Image 1 (cartoon, rainbow, N blue to C red):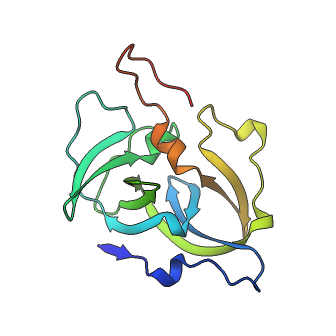
Image 2 (image 1 turned 60 degrees about the vertical axis):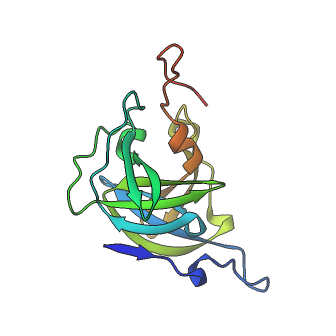
Length: 169
């Protein structure tokens, strides 16, 4: 299963509309996370990865995505919830960041929603993690969605080859 997002979903709102953010939401366990839809290249079904030696614990491995070698990061491991036991029901959210493309292993993709920019709140200090993975929080219906800083997710827990210690951002 592969879902590619059209350019229509990636367009910014017109200047006359209120400031909106279009967010893709997805689940890891019972928690809901989101990222800006403009970062999402596609959503594909789980595919086994090739592990890399000495990779950080949250690096699931790499896979070939139509000729592009894609690193896949286990979001469950990144946020401290253990390792994902991937099944055919899991998905990989392929994201573009600057000049890098990566995959996030998540349990499922939920929805694409528009939220007022003003509705995004800072995470309280008790919710902040040492890597700064959470960019903000937004309330959707009765659910709190944690908006992720994808570059921090990919950096989190990386191991320094010099001393084997986790890097801090």
